[in-house]
Image 1 (cartoon, rainbow, N blue to C red):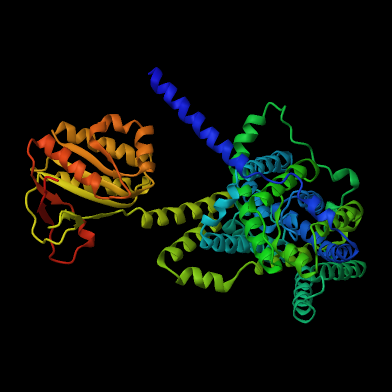
Image 2 (tube, rainbow, N blue to C red):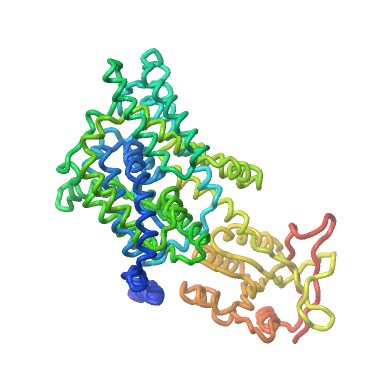
Length: 621
């Protein structure tokens, strides 16, 4: 028992040392902005100023729109846009990234609290954003962003499509001027549609008129003057129209109850001394992981796309560190999670930004705006902002990407449909992991099929694929394994070997693992179970050709002691068949004679119809 405990602690210590060594060998830059400041000049400053002002005209109203999506007060989005844009560039490797609230993170937040109506959303937001920031910092330190490339693009396309549909559906009440009580089923997809259907008689024509005018002006400007800040122009123009309508005596629903002062901008700080902190942590941790996960995917995809257009490279883990730091700042100064915005970052690039300072200029303007526009929020019509949010959501649906996902392969189509359905039916923080889990399982199913091919000694005494078609009753079976033997392949591997053991005349299996890879705990346990079953039946298992990585796993797991050191023969790169010959000698020694009939296992999946296995006499070597 003591040896087992010491071995376990030794293994854990070894893992920690490897993790620490990996992090130290791949350090992140604590202040990459210094490289920008060294060569900064007037030309770059003018370009950054122009881009920063242009982006701010979109960033501030769009941030408030995302706060609406998240079910938060408008100023949460305004302050998040300012804080994230100011703090993020201090640690980012990307020159054009604009951090702030985004549709995906906002709707994940909304989806969670909509399914938990009894939870005080405003009280828990600072703790949630803090957890998101902490997870992103740890992820950046341990270079977790590198794993984003293994997430199926089909999952992201389906997830974004479903989120866009949900965004549009949940803006319909404000668009139509209908009031639906918050909480309960009314905030789910079908609950919202059902509640809206029951209140169609309450639709206000003024809201419908503002919706139509907003949509017409938005489409017109996008088609004729796409370079203009369409979002802010439409918002200001329609707010002016609403003011005129109210002065003429028409009823217009606005955000009159949402105006704020400078004293409202700071949210409550995360309270780590509260007696409920453990409960809050358990409630929010899964949601925080989902938001951090989606934010990492958004940031990685966006920064690499824009960097390729700008002909420079980015470090996804450095940007993950930047995103984590920005979220920690938002936990204390904003109260809303931040991510990388594709629309605002693309606008920053197209506006001619040269350095990350353009983001800080944008953040400064957003901060000034947040401090000054509080009373003006009362003039924004709810129908206008809802229509603009829907316009943003529509732009997230890419028909070509959907068509590719549905037509590429059956697996991709299945993953798309399941992820989309999950997005529409369950909270988004559950849906994203459902899609990722399904795609990984389908991949593992394809990858977890090791090849078991029949081998025999030919006339020259060399090990080669068997050519015979008639099977004899063997006493020794050589099983050549090629492929991955990780946990997904363990059951198939064990089943195939047990099928070989069904021969009553079989005494010894020589397991040739020269080309076997990625042996893990599941496969080791399957091997151990097989060894014990064979020993009970007075049979023997011999391993040959195992390379160093496989031998290390066998040694660390203690399987060599179960197998017997005399039954393990390491591979030899200069003579691959030498270990099998030595294993065959060991088999003949166990059986007590120099020559034996050698049965070569073959995998039926690789045979043609009507073919059988083969056998060959084994030379004494």
